[in-house]
Image (cartoon, rainbow, N blue to C red; front, side, top):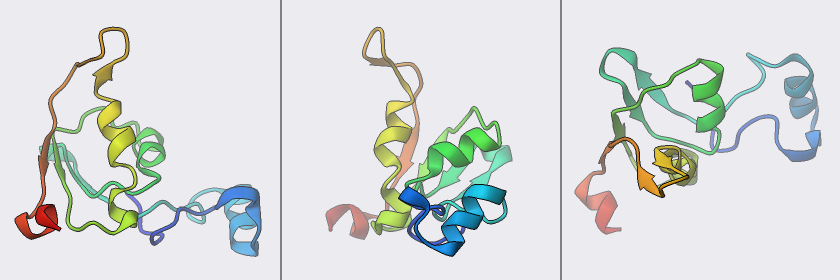
Length: 109
């Protein structure tokens, strides 16, 4: 779903040549942080900052399992907005359950 490194491209304000091109051309120059989706299992591995954009661009509507491989920001910055997307804003209750898997050594860190 994304493999552009820890920071999505383009970055704010299109400051560098790479960001300017990504903003003008789009994919494949527009990149989000690392993530992997296994469609058949609706399983998402990691959720960097651009995960919402990645899911929306591919019209993915269902994530059942989320695997966090490690706590680097490029793998976790999208966790809060992703989980918030499963909350009904009118009732402030979850409208869907997502199982999150985190290695014990990562969880304890």
